[in-house]
Image (cartoon, rainbow, N blue to C red; front, side, top):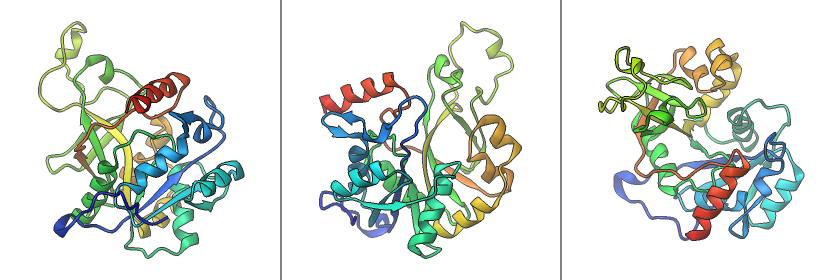
Length: 268
């Protein structure tokens, strides 16, 4: 699928060519058939594809190993690439798409997960522009501030700490950075220092990097935290993290998430 006619126009320095790949699996443990579940009158995967199409991407491809998802996506007029069923991550699935479609190594590829129907299109364009602007990074991604203590201490929320130039030092499910003195008092609010950041699971890469990534073995940190981006840091490569220009909507992991997103998109 080419860029949507309704996609925001970009000009001058903002104009960056990029592609979006949407990994989509049927076999979700908590929500089987998740990409095909209906939200506000449309299957979830349609919402995701439409977000991608509105981002200014020159091409949008859904990567799946399931014929039910493939048939639904083709019926909606979007492009599908059938991939292996043995991949351990969406990044590995995207690497297969890049190889099968023969995309040039310098192509910028944005990874938009198939369970993110409320992801603002502007953020896809942002990570693509950041990849163009940071040639020393192999991955670009985004974050938003954490202001609530319960969010910081929630293991389902991934946190990121970056250096002074915006390059990731570490990602964790634990509260980082750890404030030795303040955290001894659980009733106190978070220190107002702007250091706490929530990672948004949206990535851009150069197509050529993905072949390197899948050739690397999973790292001990990646296995411990169940965070695939730690493989990149373990092997000495750089990830640039920018503050998101918009607050992303909820992703869908559980039935409660589905209800929350249904309410948000239905109201919109």
